[in-house]
Image (cartoon, rainbow, N blue to C red; front, side):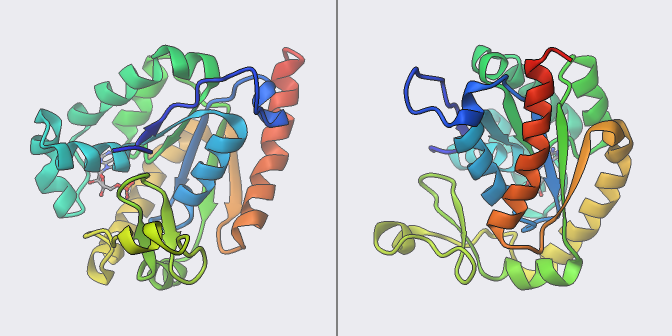
Length: 237
Ligand code: AMP
């Protein structure tokens, strides 16, 4: 399935100015439907980082009925966190591959537990910025019912706020099986518990953004900070 781990190998042409600067390593976190997927797509295209979404990665494994997929299926279907030992090595190995080292990475949906945060640190995988998209639960509930995913590219849409392009994409988008109201309430409370367990690891590099704003506004809040980070890296500070 495309768009799951999207590698944007740098070519000499079609760079955005941001992509020509020092590569950056990012973590992005937020409650389900906070806009992580949308912001990640923009960041991936703008900064040419390798986008790794653990939710997408695991859903693809389930769909492919791989060894990992068979092991995690039950957890995924019940909106439970997959055990740390099944996901940690997969993520650390991926981040150590050459494209991530050269282009920088954007990790979405990981770490979700203290053990995962510790494993990242132990592997020397240190983010330049921990982007935390804040939204209240009421907002999440309203947004989730309209969320749709393109099974071919992995891109996410919202029928009201970010509709899929008319035609082929609009016809093939689907609703995720864990996007029901009952499951979302559970996923929201799991999210708040998980974030509490990991946020102390990233206090010094955390950027809080208001996820209730329009996607362009959210992106601007992020861009200001990332620009600052890139400038500092460029200067070797
Ligand atoms: P997401 O698309 O990020 O909401 O993730 C969907 C599902 O994938 C979660 O409900 C978990 O079952 C599983 N999952 C994703 N990332 C992780 C992770 N870092 N640790 C454990 N389970 C995960």
